[in-house]
Image (cartoon, rainbow, N blue to C red; front, side, top):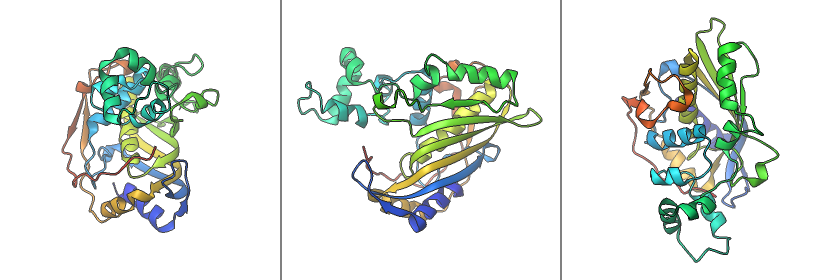
Length: 290
């Protein structure tokens, strides 16, 4: 994962310090591209421990079309908790509940979760119902029937609904590409905004898994994940953490094993994925900027 360390090093050495929406402040570069050949191994960051389970749970949640955090909360996935909690704190029903109390209520109270666990029309909604279009179904069909099309595209950025989302899509637009011999499938992601310390390791792994899933159900082999980032930034309260990561030597890549019996993109479950030979340095914690 030297590509990830190269991104960190570029931002820290060449980036500009900027104010941002969260008030925390960032160091940022604009326009960066990294390439990961999945034939060389699964691109899960090794310079800090990253847990695959949360990444998988979130990805399957996206593919299902869900936009409510309750399924994630019930599986102890905390990725999205802060944003609906922030909305809840501004509501008339807020009575100084802590984030932990809010999350517990989301978990056990279905009526509460229907109101305050909802994120609006975020990724799952756009992937599966972009103004009435199921983009994932259409993509699968197109890859099978017209492999050399230049229109193998899925967009999470819907200008008509952005203002109704708890957080507008950061990983906004993906395109797929079939090799000339019809053997390999590659994916390029355009990510408008990238939290390099907390978010990007998840994004790389998530889209590598999605590429693997889509390749399997369309009859190809996963080849290259191309990660193109607009605003690539490190929050000022993560500088120490990324400097620690940059000082660590990357380890050999792991291997993702996927159940070959699954032939429908919507049939994948957690049990269909196994990570083999993952070695990493210890985890590094950092606060999320909301």
